[in-house]
Every structure is written in C-alpha cells, then in structure tokens.
Image 1 (cartoon, rainbow, N blue to C red):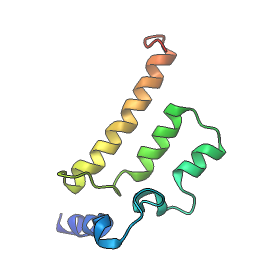
Image 2: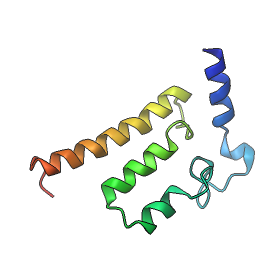
Image 3: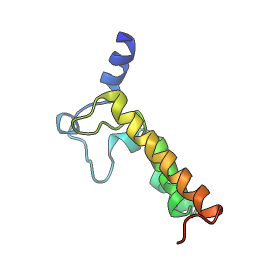
Image 4: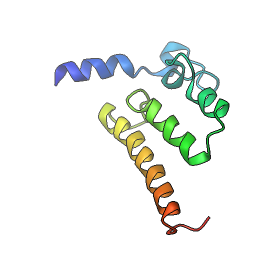
Length: 97
C-alpha cells in the first residue's frame, strides 16, 4: 500500500508548485502525446463520448481540492460511469433530450 501512495504522490503535484499552465496545458491532460481535447475534436465526438474520453484520460492524474489520491481518481471514474449511463438511458428511450 505504501508503494501505491508513493506512486500517487509522484502523479499528483500541486500546479502552483510546478508553474503549470492549468488553462492551456494542465498536466493531467498534457501527459499524453495527443491531448484528449485534440483527439475528441479531430474525431468529431459527441458531447457524451468526449466527456467519457476526457474523464477516463485524467482519472488517476488529477487531484481535486480536499480529496485524497484515490478519492480523486474515483470521482473521475464515477463521471465516466455517469456519461455511459446517460447514453444508455438515451438509447433506451428513458431520457428525453
């Protein structure tokens, strides 16, 4: 377990300490060769599909204020589930849009 914590300590740095540009190139997205937003836009993904890619890509890399490392990852994974459920409900005719 301590090894997991050390790994998360490396992954979650405070952007204020690193001089991170949290608007244009936040670390939790810029770590990939192609940022999720670029992938989403180039492929013309629908809103729900783009959000799944976005939240899945940053899960485990973005820390929310007041949340621990695991809590932060779980929050993003819960968001992925939410958008999957929304699309399933739409396909089943259970969610009018």
